[in-house]
Length: 130
Image (cartoon, rainbow, N blue to C red):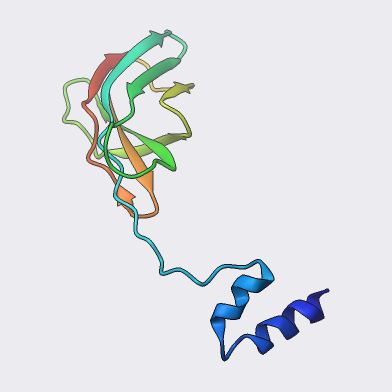
């Protein structure tokens, strides 16, 4: 079978329209997709003193398809300044359950949508002290 397919490709290399007769289509130009839209309405749905935090957000209405969402966090130690944003988790849908989050410090979270063209603008941020 592989040999027949290979032979068919050789036989049609000079006349690509013949590929249609084999049940195949002509090669299409690559298509670009848009960067995903900005997620919104990020909110905390549950939290626990054991480091549990549940987040939910709204997917953007425009833009390209979303492959996944990244969840970023920054920490503000007591009496200090906020640190850098760090990747905390990823999610395939618009919710996340985070375990073992730091306790007793102020935390801020934001979400970004990702696809092969890039990443969206970040969502609103939410702050919490567990």
